[in-house]
Amino acid sequence: MANTVNCVVCKAEVSKRQSLAYKDGRACRTHPEVQVEAQKRLAEEENKRLAKVQAERQRHVKMYGSPVPLGPECWSCRKSGIYSREHWLRMMVANEKCALKKKNVLDPVALREEYGELKLVLVLTPVPAKHPLVCNHPELAMMHSMSVGHLCICQECAKRNGLVKEWEKALSPEISPEVWANWMKIAPLMPVDSIIQTIAKIEIIAEQPIVQVAGETPA
Image 1 (spheres, rainbow, N blue to C red):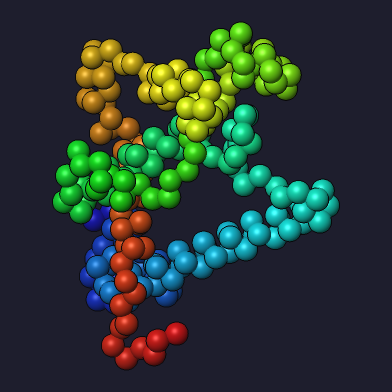
Image 2 (image 1 turned 90 degrees about the horizontal axis):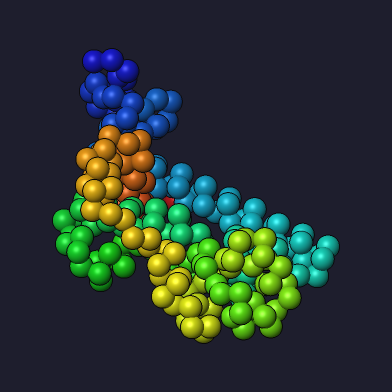
């Protein structure tokens, strides 16, 4: 078999895609000790990322007197959020996790459980030029002009300003049945489908409780 290695635990032949880095080589994903090690690595990487973010926030506050934004912001309320692309990526991962866990992918409760942390979704929304959000805010009027009649706003601001329909339509544009049918045919062949499956599997592994391996002392 091409591109295969021997598992450092059981010595079985396994492909690199079906194995994880472990000690000085690679090992089958199914070994409890390998899963424990993978969880530890994920936790360490997340702790490093959070420490880096916190350090950057403290540096920014010291220099400018205000916290640095943690990501994209709504142009109206200035709250941090995510763009619609990231939202739909999370939706696809949640859908894949439901399938892997044998949950009903059409169940909104199950989908919500697998989606993860809810964040404001920022959408470039068409806004009429005479809308108060544009007329009463010079800075938004300038952004509105530069964005050809659009403002990047969150669902809360859309609701507060009577722009829910416009926001929802921009978030989920209508797709003709023909285009949708063609996409469903080629989607399994696209690299993104494999990426979504990999992300879903990694998240499921990370959710598992850490298993103590016989002979090892808990950290």
